[in-house]
Image (cartoon, rainbow, N blue to C red; front, top):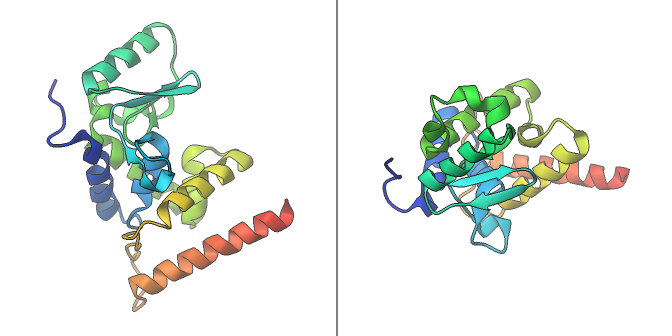
Length: 198
């Protein structure tokens, strides 16, 4: 089974960055989700690196040095009857999204994993019209869980020096910097409103 070309520690970021451009996801947002979902090697989530050979099942996440080892563990879990297993860079759940991949190897391929995650996130954005809400729903539909998750992702995304969002179609002459400023202002307003309600 062929591994990814180059450094596996950069494979998720490369795949997420390409998927962001391909599907019109704000620059750096999918990468931030990857850091939250499968990040390792950084004390701060904004500095963690998404790892492609990551699985999460039965309440715990595990990192493996190779795709083959991660696949062996998933196969063993499936044989034991565990069906809810998150895999790969973006921790796509096999129970709910397994049909998106041709095989288990494909589910672990950074490009396929990130591309499906981008398409799923974009569909959530199409439903909500709000990236913050779409990010929360990527994790859960439960209000408390999705809110906490969105806060983590936004905290990992906003400090990134190259996190200037790609402009969605139809915004006319607004600059990327102005669009980012609007996104930050909306995020801070939602956060202030949430704390006022708690």
